[in-house]
Image: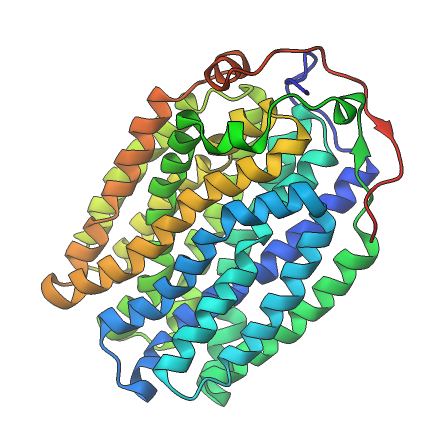
Length: 423
């Protein structure tokens, strides 16, 4: 079993790790763009199918129901069949369902397709994080994952620039066909070029099991922390485009352009948060608590802002602050667990986050219908408070984490390259 590095807290990535980060960055980028397109298309979809805001929120939430449910099975599949294989399966299947979204002829069909799309994407996160863990040392792990996960914020910049013009000129269906085609190219790149994993002597003598991870109250607390974080992220991603379009009177292309500033700030924050997590060797409380405190205050000011510029400004502060806590939430578990358990662990934590994606879009849609968008955006503070509280009560170091899971500490073995999983 591989404990955190006893050397420098942060190490340089070798060639194989850099290629892994590049390819998985691309995979996560198209994954996130595929999810974000529907947020930009919601006004058009709502108009075509005559949907209320609550129904529009349901079209987003139904994806997250399936996505959340498949997080843990996805991690377990990666642990059993290999991270690379499961990553490729997910890329190919979800690209097909992205294209099928553009063919939906009714609201009911749309819901079914988005649910199946969620299943396909749901097996990806655990496999992806496992792939990074297998190809990096503990001292590199969160910095590498931070770069990969910054793709989410980059996607929030790119998606409006691609999708908004397509929706405006060719209709909402064209956006789904376009990103599906790009997904097929990313699948081919990952399939051909993702490096084989490195195995260690510890692979031959695993201690602990998937059951150890899934039955741990400590691991569920980390999942709850990510639940709070993703309430903020998916609440904003789902409803800000509609709010700017319907309440502020901005064209969809203008609303998309305004999202570049907060998305760019979040990109930087995710990378910085990953580096801080490696520097502090976990200790999520040092990062998550101040980050969520600032985010809470900014969310309140955003919800009560009278002007569009002030709204975007406070939203930028809120999302950037919250994003600093993204990778620290994963840091202690992924630095502390052996590679054979990281798929299940990452799947469990991301399950918590995607449960936030189930709750936030529909809850905010109901609040927007009944009390207005101010109340809907104010709801997001609940997520920040929850994440901060759980950051204080979860183990802060590898030693306390291992004790909580009743795992023994062992010296770190030297990685030995061997023939990896089949392509």
